[in-house]
Amino acid sequence: MSFIKFLGTAGARFVVMKQLRASGGVWLSVGKTNLYIDPGPGALVRCLSSKPRLDPSTLDGILLTHKHLDHSGDINAMIEAMTQGGFKKRGVLFAPRDAFEEDPVVFKYAIGYVEKTEVLKENSEYQIEDIRFSTTRRNQHQVETYGLNFKTSPHTISFITDTRFFPELPNLYGGEILVIHAVRLKAIGDEPIEHLSIEDVKSILKKAKPRLTILTHFGMTMIEAKPWAVAAELEKELGLKIIAASDGMKIDLEGDLNDE
Ligand SMILES: [Zn+2]
Image (cartoon, rainbow, N blue to C red):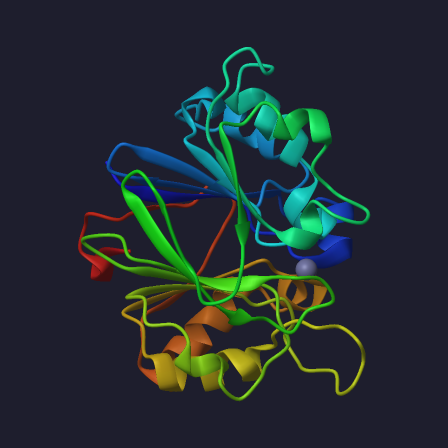
């Protein structure tokens, strides 16, 4: 069965530090292929305590969108779990170059445990067994990161990870399912916090018109505003199907998207 499961919906520092939401990232299964996206703090524990349990030794790969701690905290633990402590060389690790270079987040010994490392670059195509995906142009964030478009079937999926809004952004994502890291309720002018606000999300959705939008990666202002209430209001305003992810939420990728 193909599915996405949210093992965390926390975004940015305070929600992660206080664990107001879990910060484990996302498990994506398509056909027989299992890919883990952004193993933030607690990813390993969230996999093992998930019901039904998700077994990291069945992962075919791990994709790190960027090196910030809320995305990468458990990267080495998950590599060890995928490779059974390095005894079984296995899997592909995808990450931008700066996750490996100065102030790296992936240990050298752990890189030796995976079968292959692929450096994410802008506008490039990648494949891991049944999952094909491409990167967008570079996001505007303090560290190197790219948006993702998964050419999965029967539904394509796009992921907008952390970035500041920029005018071309709404044109880069064609997925029927759009996962957006909606960190902030309101924009805060020129402060150096390069995250999307709900105003930005509106601009994106008006253009991209996905069949199903999933908001996740919530910061404090979104938690206070209750993500499900924000999603319901957006849904009414835009006339699109929009939901807020919750910890442990699983979306069946083979079902009818209107049922979600
Ligand atoms: Zn970030």
